[in-house]
Image 1 (spheres, one colour):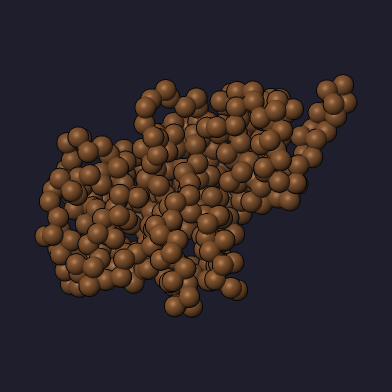
Image 2 (cartoon, rainbow, N blue to C red):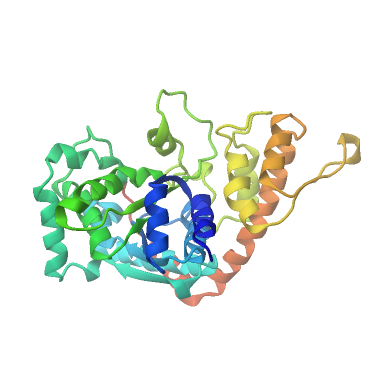
Length: 359
């Protein structure tokens, strides 16, 4: 595969790439650059942004020739007081997430899962953490608080001050030259780029993927860019505005039916988002089913055509919702079946349902 083709695939993932010139140079110099993503095991339900969308993005990165390392950030979640600060519970959630991605057809032959808990006995890892901490102020580190779902002005625990230093160190310890995380992780990735030359490392290229919206009406605020994306993103803490990997057909229909989807509005429209980032990634043709008296069925072979028709009010919101719910269920049904027939996944799911969930 030629470099330009690889870049084209990666640009499908990256809502922002810092920088495209660096990416091109890397792809021309390294046959299989190491790409990293990390996840904090938290919560007892996995939504489609965590499950299906992540599998889609990682498969694209490996298709573009990247060697992918996925960090199970169990110690980071522990530092962030997730799951009541119970490390064993956090680790079981991490194991369940891996089973979900298997069911989502993530290309596991091209992905290596690395646990943060495997780092903790490595003196070299803690040297990296300490080096990053030593050359930064507390103020600079707390500017990265949003990577933990926190705000800069929050009263942070001492363990949470350590978290960004650990996450930046993860990149160097894994030997990653590309960080492929959500826009909410942008600040720590920029921290890693700042400190890399000071510590003798190559600046990592930042490929920030889009964060899927929740189903509710977007709030009226002045936030922009990454801050706005974080404000809008799907959240487990708002279950009626999120589609979970194990939601039934009835659940999906109910949630989609009451979702925000104003007629003719294509900006910040969650139903169109799910069509773009999820449905059209897995299907070749999208059909709007309508009675003949309302013009009959409409068929779209690309998301762009669907968006244009909706913007012109040629597609009614309710018709779009019904079709989106149908396709989402068709995508999730085989995943639900795989998880139900997977004894290890079922055992983990039953266990974690009883765990305490903390923000």
